[in-house]
Length: 320
Image 1 (tube, rainbow, N blue to C red):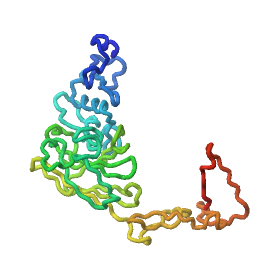
Image 2 (cartoon, rainbow, N blue to C red):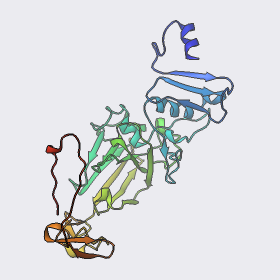
Image 3 (tube, one colour):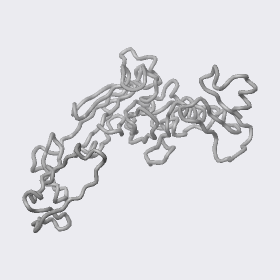
Image 4 (cartoon, helix red, strand yellow):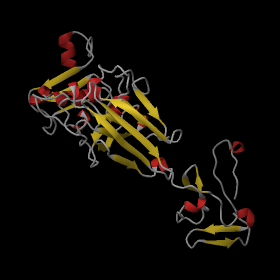
């Protein structure tokens, strides 16, 4: 198809166009799809009447922009209906709906991709308590206070959380789920590139959501929608976050059930194993037996055989 079109046009696609939509009158391979698109590309393909559906167009163009699908609260692939990458709208008559906070973070819209004037980052391990005010993307053009449209909650891993105000207004007025609520979304690749997102929660005023054992810290992060104001123009949502302390002292930490990793201790409000071998290690003449939580004395020499790369002189190790 592309070769024929290029021959007729006299130039190589996409040529002068940013995006090119192919419309196939009848299904010619498989009828199990409405449309498809290539990631980070200029091409999308629509069969039958689906080219007329704004929701389908915006979904496929999202793939062209590098966006993955959006899963909902049930974990299924397409069930985040706060986002066009979740396939919420199938009609020629409606389509005023946008993407979720994770997708908005990735896109170069709203001041640029990633952190910027309208996309903020908070790290709970730096500030254990913080608050912020959000504006919906539907009113981005009416933002005299320069409020952010997305806040990223940094986890220190590739999987981060993104918070937005799902204001049902303007280009988002026909939103399909969680109108005028605060939405919490998780995605991978630090929110910078193609990764399926998952809707974790949507909050009305006064509601909270807890990320248990946040980023493996042993501490819970609680996000609260303190207030939502849609009477004003623009509408806003005030949100607060608290990384709760799991402990104040070592005595607050319960045993993790693993004998050989040592005792549990309280570090910066979180419970962790101290990593101290309760048997003293090989140097002390004992090894730790996890199966029965005992220490066994070493009766003879230990032979250790190692396989290294081509640079063994650069490798060192310790026996504990």
